[in-house]
Length: 553
Image 1 (cartoon, rainbow, N blue to C red):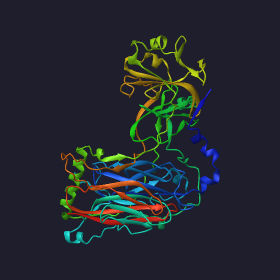
Image 2: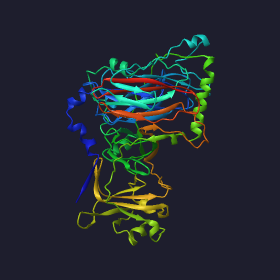
Image 3: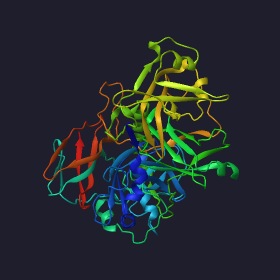
Image 4: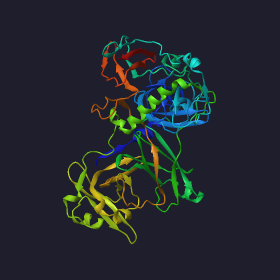
């Protein structure tokens, strides 16, 4: 009988890797952005570079990084980014309630929590956010200057040239790697309307100020394959004690690839080793025992950084027209479904189950009002057994030659990818809501438990309609890792004015030694000056930076 082992590497990683390897690893995350000045409601595009400070190159250990937009009172927004060989990218939709002011963009990995005395503000980026919809100001404050004094404010992010990257913006936009090492970069073309950027970090200053930890502890496991989601049971002491050793589940409705299980520890915690869950979505947390009067809650992975030394944002009345232009641009793009201007870059999606499934499209058969009749009349791969109070489903497993009889152990039953521990709920479910039944007739190891077969009841809506969740189950809003996106060409229909502030953004450009890349872009409908900024590092961690200018007449 064939067995498919799911996520076993994530369980064994901490055991297989030498203890000293984790203790020696010191990670630092640099974040580049498409701009340094935004209005509330803007999209903030970012690119993450995770460096291993032991050798200066990119770290391939952590697969997730955490980002906070920080005021002196704490985070105002957070994000997560998936890393692959130390690189990742994403987008943050800035809330339209953020007060006007300067903020820090802080980035770190789970390994940073294991470094004694780690400074979460090391290498933080400073950004400005202006909110024209409210008079609210951040605690760091706003410094009101006369128009004359404001003209003397210098741009605090000059983008110094560094490394072997050469930029030619005189015609078609070309980037050339003149060095003998591969480089990985982000690129941004954005409107330069004269609002100065705050003084902030760049690849050169980041690398010069980067430190390496010396003393380590075991506060938190590293995200080797993806975000490790930590949960804890909330309930009475008796319920928490009775749950010890039980199986808890974490799943995303409609996405069977995002299904995980964990053993509940004596202290009521359960840890799920994921391969990164993408996007903002709903999570279903199932504490396992249906009679349990307790539920799981997610432990926040964020540090909650504060920075009392953020400088005040200089402003003057001369900025009014430029701020209104930026705000209008943001509102037009939001109203015109600006996500159509973006292209999501390829990101890893690993199938949870093998492809040799058996699928029953229920509309191809006689419809029955009871679920039990489906199993009796035409689904041969599913069997069930009755007891005085319960019913249980079983799958007829198969090997490479023939169909084997029903197993003695119950299968894993799912509705829209969400585990259903009490199979009585399956029998009571309305089959007219179900579009198809997918049967996986093999054994699967999910987390720490083996399941002899899996059945997924897929509804038309894909969100468990009319499903009565048990008291030990919670549906929670979850912030997954951001999708890496590239700004796309504008709407050419003429129905929407092209007022984009970010003209071109690409978070993940890789150039081999001597390689030249030409990038297409379209300038917006308005005239003005535009900056081109390239930032990144080579394979040894050496900073790479170049900038240029484009004028639209």
